[in-house]
Length: 279
Image 1 (cartoon, rainbow, N blue to C red):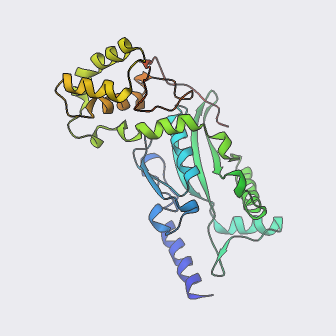
Image 2 (cartoon, helix red, strand yellow):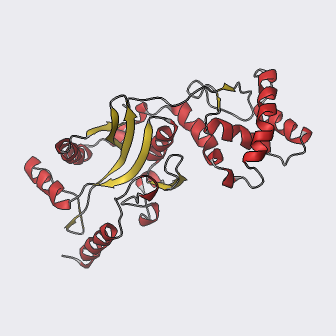
Image 3 (cartoon, rainbow, N blue to C red):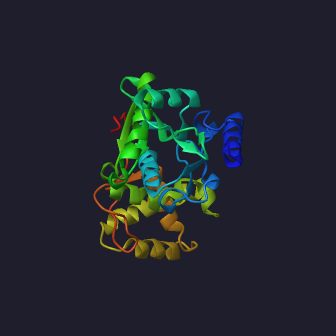
């Protein structure tokens, strides 16, 4: 075994000892983390503070990041665990041998396989986990499909639903809108804005939007209100994003991309908790 192979083996053993790939919700640690990779798939490395888990999520490709935002929006998704390891390593090696497929190796040493997302869903039949692996169609090479077959068999043995998510299954408008409001989910991303201020201003701001009825560009309407209420520039825009991100207010998330230089129609949300069936 090469020195690099030995180091890789020790590294993965240490990941397991440190609890990577274990836990739920806020306590889960991704097996692979953004800082582990100098070059991620498609050159993307992203960290996002989870809406559902309140921990930092690590995505390694643009499509993973987009799917994460999609899952954050869905009420029926209650936990998101990315970079989930297929352990023990010996089982995936056995599956590969049974299928006549070469197991992933680095520097002559078999490596722990990971899948992109393990999701916990709340459905009409109760809570269940599913596996979703993300890959654009153009990257579904013969070798990639071989590796996915190892994944499929591994999770089938556990009775866990598994499927591939390609780019056409990720709603573009919704994802862009969630990304636009993502940082406003929590007050700590905007100094000076807190629950009391939002409580004092939200009804007035909502009334301004309703009265405008989608006639004035969003940024103009928010800056004008900032000025009239003697607020720091950007405050009303943040409150709008916060109210949308937390689903107190609603808008047509799927039909159009929210653009700050275009008008926006919003409405009061009723109960947003819904059970889902995820593709």
